[in-house]
Image (cartoon, rainbow, N blue to C red; front, side, top):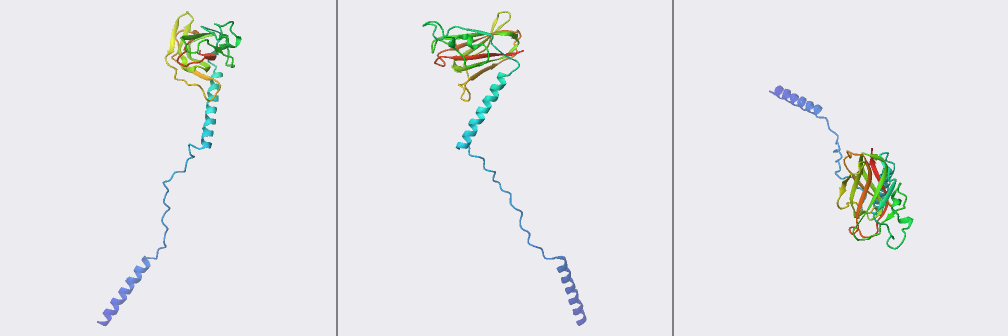
Length: 218
């Protein structure tokens, strides 16, 4: 009987020893770092620095746009221009600084000025050296862009067609000395040689100053 107890005690001790070998002490493992849901703080949109950056970006965007228009290989500038009125004609000879021929050629700050601030309609017509199947007209204007109301094209047969008419959605340019009024359309079936632009004077009151007009096509 005593031997049986001894044997049983030995077996229990062996079992305990076996369990202790299998369950070695574990080191404390720190939990993984929790990922932060916070996003990096963006620069405040309404700070002097942000406003200055936006101003410079707008100037750069304007300069890039204008450079592309000025050097467009498919664009050509008017060879000659006429208009329905010129500033000062009702009071004597028109000064060269106001004549419609100033519309001819590239933008150069010399402009045609109409003779009506807010009465009726005025129009100017530009003729080009090379007739092209037109896809766009670009008007360079320093004052009165919102008064532009119609763009017409004259093909080589002498027929006129309206490329656009309505209220101008272009506002006075704030990032450059010139405002570009651009109208694009489907390529014309007949080659275009002249463009006529109509101005509704009372829509944008004041004298209108047009620098140049570019015909785009091939």
